[in-house]
Image (cartoon, rainbow, N blue to C red; front, side, top):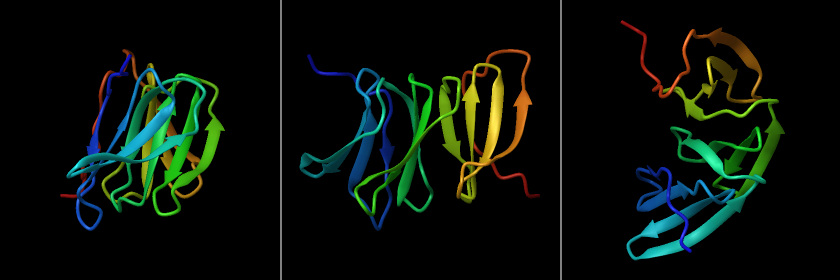
Length: 141
């Protein structure tokens, strides 16, 4: 059985033509060369399937959240995962903000904003309804 791909991220130059994808049934992130379509590396840090992942704007690292309630950081330069920590609840979404200095994680009705360097919680918002999707934006005007 071939697992399905839940999402992809295309890395822009200087790392092109690579693409990454997590599979919802497997606890891994895979990096492919797109021309020809060849698997370059698979990262295994989770015990259960990956819910979502986000590539840093620099293209050098990525974060993933999975059904095991963990957040993992993958270092694409070293070619291995560098951090895996349990946050107590399952997050469904993780995204870096535009500059890459912070990221946010969503778990049901809570949105937590964290410092990218050490995953320290900056603040947390509680929304009345379940958050289904989110995107980083530029608030400067």
